[in-house]
Length: 230
Ligand SMILES: C[S@@+](CC[C@H](N)C(=O)[O-])C[C@H]1O[C@@H](n2cnc3c(N)ncnc32)[C@H](O)[C@@H]1O
Image (cartoon, rainbow, N blue to C red):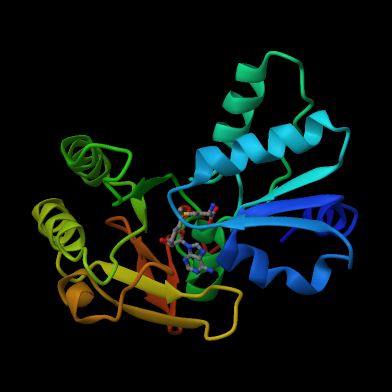
């Protein structure tokens, strides 16, 4: 969380968010503040509720995890606010996204060009995800995988693994980070070949190195190309 995001939550009249995220920031919410929480999949309803409250001149905070502009609520809130056509002012407050939070736990795997791909096909067709995986792998980006796997959804990660192995060496360093910055945080560095042996769930982010990524003193590093002999 950034200090600005913390300030906004602490000074809100209304806090709106997926219930798991609201629980994570509970200690920052002042007593008497209205909390509108809900389940996954009700994002449009939450955005509408937030806009309605803003129209009552309330300071409304919509919570996302990490950064709200990365697979978060920022887009849908802007879209819903525009639908109302009444000029509700919306400020997008940046946070620390899982890609960089996870990278920091692994070392420095993202100091060169990288691509971020979500393996969730709830809102993006799987064919397009596959196309993006192939393009990013072929172009030698380091690749960050969000939404890699849930209890009932293991196939996308297996398919992604097969695609990545077509373009990248089995010994490519891979980092698997669960609950970055939260209780229960765990970071593992492995290889692409062994990726499917790792514990991966919906609070996990996976970082796949590019062809130059290596292990330096146990940390995952993608060299930027500096000449260290100088
Ligand atoms: C819907 S996306 C939300 C991303 C979020 N807006 C962000 O910027 O990090 C959910 C995915 O983000 C990743 N994620 C979110 N929080 C995480 C954390 N604390 N540790 C590791 N991965 C996380 C996981 O891959 C999870 O499946």
